[in-house]
Image (cartoon, rainbow, N blue to C red; front, side):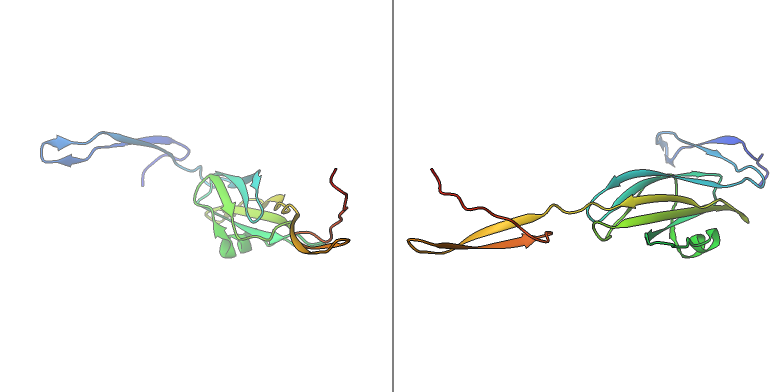
Length: 168
C-alpha cells in the first residue's frame, strides 16, 4: 500500500519444497499515476467471413471494455459508462477476436477504459466481414440426340450465366 505512483517494480519469487528450489520467476509491474487519464487505442487486424480481429492497447486503465455494433446510418454510439457496464471486458492489451458475425457486414467497434472515476475517450474502429465467393454447381440432366439439360445450384450468388459450345 505504500508504493510510489508511476513507478515500475520488479517482483522475484521462487518455489521451495524441502531442500529443492525451483527457478526464479520475475515480473515487472508499474503503478498507475495518481488520477491518470486512461486511454484505449484500437488497431485494425484481420477480417474473415464471420469474425473480426483487432488489437486493443490499454494505457493507465484499471478496466476496459468494447462493444461491436452493426453499422447503420445515423447510429449513435453508447457512452463510455455504457460500454464499461454492458460491453465485453478487455483484460489486457493485445489481440481481440469477435466471432459469430454476419458476413458482408460493416461493424463499428467502440471501446472505453476507466481508472477509478476517470473515463477514457471512446475509441472506435470500423471493420467489415468478408463476402463469401459465389459458387455454382452443375449437374447433368437428361439428354437426347438434339438436346441436353442440366441444373445449376447457386451458393452466395444472385444469378448465373452460361454458354453451351460444341466440343471440338
